[in-house]
Length: 362
Image 1: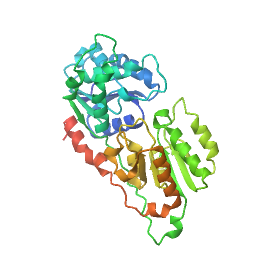
Image 2: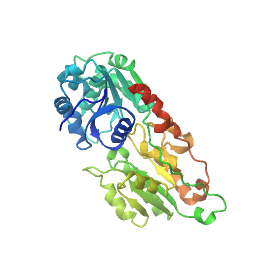
Image 3: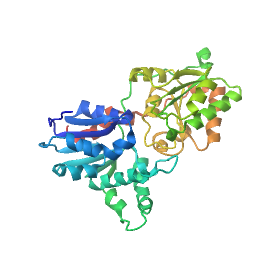
Image 4: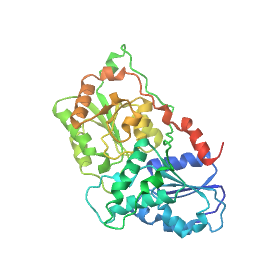
């Protein structure tokens, strides 16, 4: 791979997939920048080893003024390998932080991912997070995280990092699609079964077991509904997906990753309720996209969701989730006449001014 310095800004994305890829695309479309990105596969290896690879690919002679990198990159390693980059303005962007990642089982090396993010934050000039929850959970966990070091543990790290931390919301490209509100005169349409959609990565941290098990209970109660399961799939898919595909085969409308963004939006426009059961979420792009199109969000009262959605859209317990979904099944007409939740403040159009300041491209 050849790489030349053409523009003043350098974008580095070691895991170019999902929201990481969307942010890279937004920056490339709006600002003068060079970009080096690696495919969104084998996340653990990207976090461990991408700095060395990238250090070899960047030009030895360059005039970069700003480096913008996601926190998957070990920025400290890159600067040690390429001290010529020290004079640039180094911006680190957190889509997620590893200090509170809910691992399924203890593995050797798990500690290193969070530790690398701490080191990267220390060498960065500016550290941005996609939500207040992301920033606060990272800063609030550093002290206890560092205490896991058995001896010779450093101190006051969180204070050193906090002074350069800010929230910069992810710029969601909201589609020009909105499902029309159902009026009282459209009774037949209002009687159609409620349509739930779950548009998340097929991984354990999105807690698909809770979503499917809730649907199984609705099914056992004899309630009618439709469901679409969207989202990206990786090498290891939780077993619940195969179980759910079989048990819900009469209810499933769409299954698997949408072939294009336009197809994804089209499917969302046919749905009524977008559900999150996540135990690890720092923003929630697909939830915002679905809400903008006209779906009613239903999310846990934790993580980034209280920051984004009103209290009426949140649930506190698994029992509350079941209760709310049951009510939607019984009275879809009431849901379809409610006012749409406003999420335009997270649109790329609104947020572009903040990114303009970041890249000095007014």
